Amino acid sequence: MALRWFDYIRPFYKKYKEALLYLLFGGLTFIVSIGSFTLFERVLGMSALVANIFSWILAISFAYITNRIWVFSSVAYDIVGIEKEILSFFGGRVVTLLMKEIILYVGIELLCVDSIVVKVAGQIVVIASNYFISKVLVFKEKK
Image (cartoon, rainbow, N blue to C red; front, top):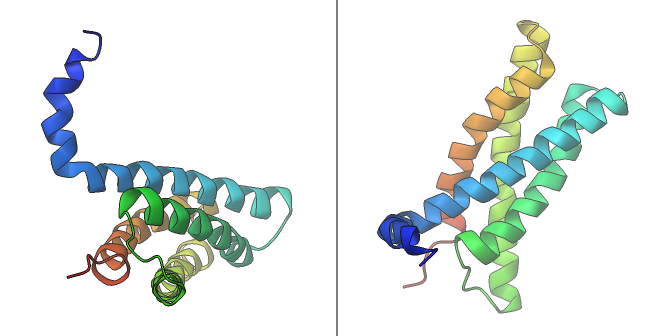
């Protein structure tokens, strides 16, 4: 009886499960990215561009695991399939890393906006781009 409210949202969840899980794990990846960026830049004193690369490595590793298991339910189980999946996932993320580096450079160096504000704005652009790359190129359903 306590979970009766779930009966009302179940159709919505079933219809949008992938997008909802992507948003959930994207939000957690966002926290990993911003938290580690802040640690590297503000605490350890790295430049924003270098801190972004280190935070990218941590966040993308987390994102790959969560996207593979829970969001897109990957069907690649042999070594060749997994290698191809990893290469396309990280390759796509390199493209969005370059996008974010440009956003950081323009925002911080040219426009003199606070680095955390620029990082958050860039992250929003990148999340949308990453979903498209993952859905269309990396974890596409097998026919």
